[in-house]
Length: 385
Ligand SMILES: [Fe+2]
Ligand SMILES: [Fe+2]
Image 1: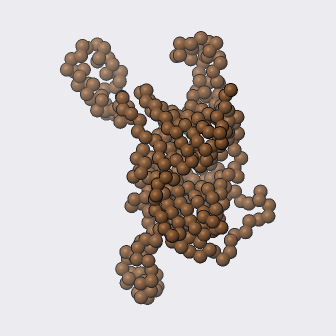
Image 2 (image 1 turned 45 degrees about the vertical axis):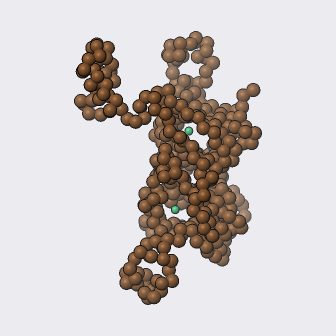
Image 3 (image 1 turned 90 degrees about the vertical axis):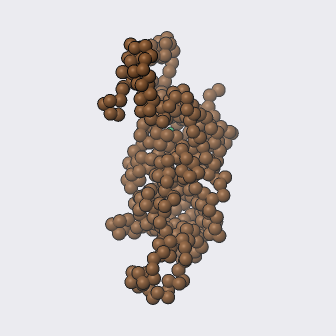
């Protein structure tokens, strides 16, 4: 804010000391113009729900992909998601993302990835349900379905604009490079390049690798982590009365510097308590079961949406929110935050961090009522009654 912009206090003083003259009217006009869009009174909160699994998306013989980028889900500026399926042997071809880091969680089946880091380090890893990967922005990678059956994984990106102009595929580059350069660079005769794809492959068929990496006999000794891999479901959860949470930030998975990933499990009737995240947006994907999410966007603006499996939610940084589990079956969701450091403040912890007399005055209630309110976070509370 520039020094010529009036503060709220000076606006208040101008309004209260002067009658509504020209000077005050001009002040109001300048104040309204200076206010960020979030603070415009009376404006409704935009939709924070998207039905990703209900889209057609990209479909090919070897797999499919359904996207939730800003093109499909405008509120989700900082995080994008893709639900991808690969047939056994199918290859999500060699590519990199110029605008975003990529995270993934395997929901079903098995796959193998290859990735190269800028220091030349190569890594080949295999993934099962509950395992995650993180490829920093620009690291070249590929994914192959290992069978048996389809491998289904959820991809998350730390930029809602990652897709358009942001994904660079090896076949696309080669198809658009002149043969005399390719001959010099790739050491093949020009005639060889007539066999290469004429455009981007994206997802194509492939043969299953001859050898699967064999696990060691003691599953407890299976490494929980490689440089780009983290076995999220193996992490010891935080357990609450109404459910549990596994939180993987850069503390647990050092390379994951721009995202924090959470698997949350809610028992029937549970309440994920009222809270906010001071420095990150929150993106949710519902794997199983249902929930009702309510957000609070200041100035009296609230919005509630119902979610079921295959749907995505987006909650802006700093917005208050809570999750009510719905339905008779437990609810499972995956959550991403666009920061490698996890932070939250809950309403109950905040109330515990204030003197009783101040709360009594703030709410205009008796000391007895203040005494009955929580002093610390409940996290996920159990069904009442
Ligand atoms: Fe990718
Ligand atoms: Fe949250």
